[in-house]
Structures are given as C-alpha cells and as structure tokens.
Image (tube, rainbow, N blue to C red; front, side, top):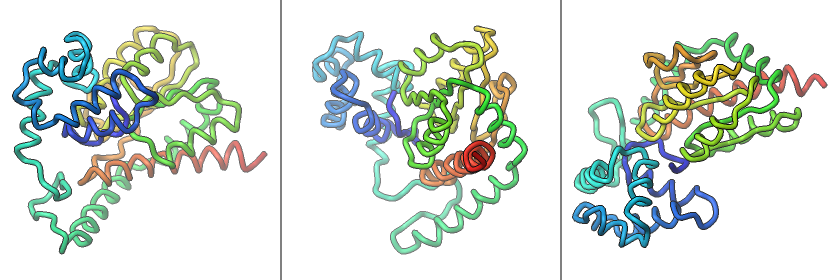
Length: 270
C-alpha cells in the first residue's frame, strides 16, 4: 500500500503509491503503468491488466489487495466510477455548496473552523501527556501512517534524539512485518482516517493483541465509534476533516501537540 492516501479515490491512491514508494520496486512500477493507462483499466480483464504491467496475474492481484481492495474487479470498478465523476474541483465531504475558484477561500475557511471546533471538543491534554510519558518509557516506537508530513517527521526526530528507535511504515507489507517482529514494550502509533487505505489497522490491532506481549497501542482516529478502539491503550479522536487537506491538518495538530509535550518534558529540560 502506498503512503499518502487521504482519499478513497483510487487514482489519488495510485499517485501516492508511485510517488512515495522507495526505489524501483515492482509495486512502484505497477502503479506507474496503471496510472499511465488509467483510462484503459476499466475495460481490461485481470490477465490483460497484469500483462500490461508486465507482472504475473498473482502479483497484480496482490497489488490490488495491497491498495486496499478485495479484488481486481473491485479495484477496476472504483477506477471506472472515479473516471466517470472526475473533475477539477476540490472535494468537500460535508456541505452542499459547490466549491469554485471564486468561493474557494470562503468555503475552506468555514470548513476549517468547523473542523477545529470538532477537534477542540475531543481534545484532552492529559491523554497526550500520558502518551508522552509512555513514549519516553518505550525503546522502539512504530508509526503506521499513510501520510508523510514535516510535522509527523518532526515528532519522530524528537524521539530519535532521546535515544528511541523509530520505525515509520507507510505500506501494508512493512506494517505486517512490524507486527511479526514486535517485542514486549514496543509502542505502536496507528492512524485511522475512515478511508479504505487505512483499514489495515484493524488487522494490526487484532494481531498485536493476539501476541499478548505487553505491546502498547495508541490510535489516532477520525471517530471513536469503531470496535478496534476498545483494544487500544490510548485513543485520540481527532475527527474527520471536511476535506482531504483538513484531514491531514487535524492529524498534524495532534502530532504537533504531542511533540510539544514530549519536548517540554524530556528534551528542553535536559
């Protein structure tokens, strides 16, 4: 799975797959070739799509599943739907007024204020302070996220300079390896934003709990109304933004505050 998907739109997810995967992996090249031939995909069979991408049928099927879809058929239909409704306007998840170039600032200003109000309603400083203490006690911290940002990388840097081993895993294969190698006392920070490509965290939580090895799980989630929340040690409800941009902003705010608390307690006082 790729690394920057705050959208259920498979075209955006493919772009993230291509742009953020490292090196010259099969997955990266497959994403590139699917993007290059995106308008043809809805009419191709699984075998034809695999041939187009110069991979085996099993490899292409696995690619579709790693992208967050149950099958190639589901992946193909999502692409077909996305192409049919593709337009230049930014998506607003809430509200009925269409966003145009003329009203862009007004629409986004209003949605940001609403998102911040929702974030404030669930904001509990004591929970962040408690997690900061736990971070300081842990030796190895794992971040499972689909977005790179300077804010989140800054939090990882804070942990690194205090001697913590930090692993950032943005795709499903890496996340699954993390679960296998997790040790007692390790801490996982998982992000769930209610989009298809973050649903791997449900398997991650289930498997970590099955290990019963004293592993700590902190969940940053768009909503607490998910069953997996009950199996986590920390739950930070940040809300779902009205747009993909504010989705990222809300999680960055949570990471920024956690970083500030950690620095104040364990870095600046040194």
